[in-house]
Length: 175
Image 1 (cartoon, rainbow, N blue to C red):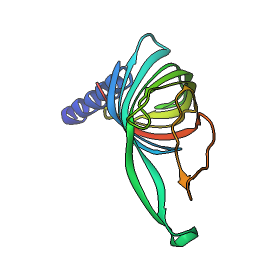
Image 2: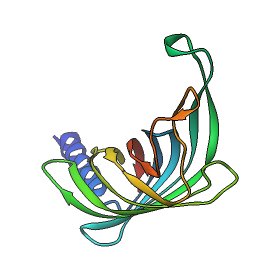
Image 3: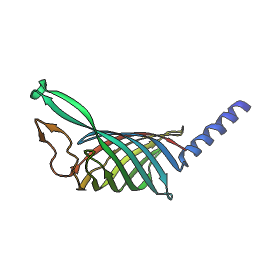
Image 4: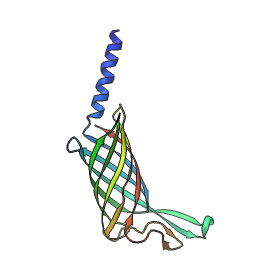
């Protein structure tokens, strides 16, 4: 009985501590006009607002030989990006949460020019009883300055202009 009591207290304590975490750090994998990997940091500013900063590198895909399914495609590094988003976060049932808010992105898309993008971020996340968090989001960015060329097929850009839609999957450690 004594062991059961201590186990119950430990489980309740861990679940309370996990839901009250103010910071989270981890990785975010993104897919949009380019493939990307980002280091991600979140900090709650209040009960329902938080700041997310993502620093990453993107890998562009380009066809270099052939056409159609027989084409040889390579991935090469684009440039670094830093994205900041201010989010309103609402806790739903259990560990589920919903968030959304504006975002700003500074990038060096081709390693030789500067980019500035404005957009937003909208998504869901789940806080486990252990101090881990998983999330899925949609982050469309319109590059006001500079353009991330994105996916090139037969030397033609499939996504025109500076619009850069992206989906992300993240895994973070909450502390």
